[in-house]
Image (cartoon, rainbow, N blue to C red; front, side, top):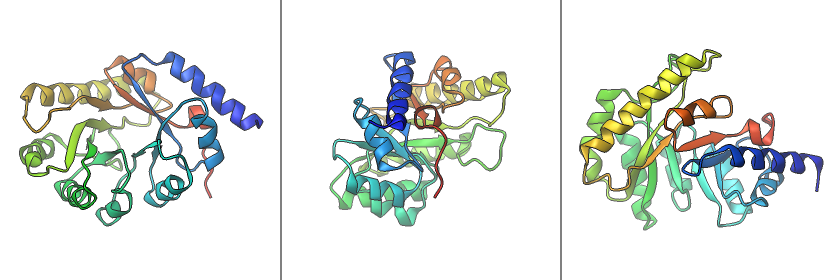
Length: 226
């Protein structure tokens, strides 16, 4: 085993030990090679996150088929068809147009695809996500899409050293999550996932109610851009 593989496995073990039982770990493997993912896989990790469709497809074709692949980056509608046959969860649904395309492609593959609705909670305008009005409008039409299962919400906090600001942004997402749960919509039978928190802020996210964290560099080291 290489030194890099040992580091990955050690990092992963430490993070898993620190996570509460109810929190799901998505190991963000984007920009990292297959051998790095295989090192994590060897420890029992089965959920991996990619942000580019072409990278996810290439890794899916190469790797073990019991891996659950999560698309965590912004997704263009014209690329949904490439991942619809196998993707386990799509994290960043931010429009009805995208939801409709996922539904269409899921139906064509005789599947129901789990998705998260992305909310804009950061002060940075460059981050994607819906506001409250857009979320409510989308919730009104979700029942029209039978091949999509909305599992919860996702959001990314501002990239800042101000932990109180990050905590407040995560709190705001938890409030929205609880509000949607309280609606008791018949179309949201498994609305149970709040995906927030990455390598730099996942401990804050968990304290504020996250049930799914997306951790990359703390497991795999710094990203390798080709």
